[in-house]
Image 1: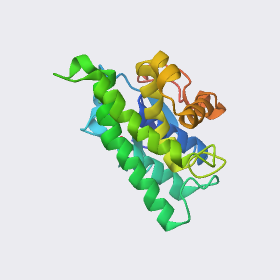
Image 2 (image 1 turned 120 degrees about the vertical axis):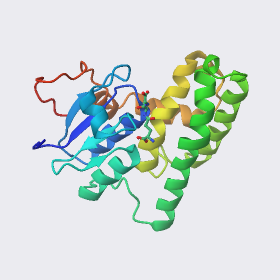
Image 3 (image 1 turned 30 degrees about the vertical axis):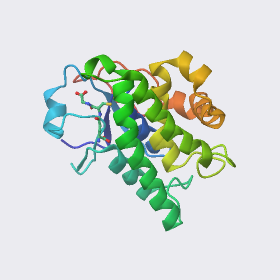
Length: 216
Ligand SMILES: N[C@@H](CCC(=O)N[C@@H](CS)C(=O)NCC(=O)O)C(=O)O
């Protein structure tokens, strides 16, 4: 298979795919986007990556990148006009640690809060509160800035916010009334109202063989 542009296999609502799309946009990479059905994954997709998770990026040279953070790093390594990656090694390490907390603990509690019926003995409220405690730490990081590292979104914001968005969606009324972390609420609101998010949340029908190329 030879393509002119890298191809991103994506699923609109997936937070991992969202952060990959955001990085691709902010790093101004031209990629084709193909919406995948997670319920019926095409053979073409499964042949690329047996994990069967989105996002997957297929490069013109045939290389496959099938982890969202690796896709973000790929984009950053080519062009990083907004300095998503900090020049300061210490801050960069802290960013990676923070992302790890969200990909690990936060996601663990988010899943058990959002989909409590799918987990045996999951105590919805307990998991909501555990995730809230992690957000309280972010609240302190946002004391001086709108975004984690200053006046514009960088690596930790774009990697974490798609999961915070899901946390709100799990119970919007509770989040809006009872979270009581005003800086986190503003931070999420700025993200939800951003042009950037609306650009990467356009709706596409599931890609089928023969469909014209759609550029992200
Ligand atoms: N560690 C992976 C996780 C990706 C992931 O779990 N994506 C979910 C969708 S949000 C998925 O594709 N799940 C497979 C499925 O639902 O069949 C990454 O960062 O790319």
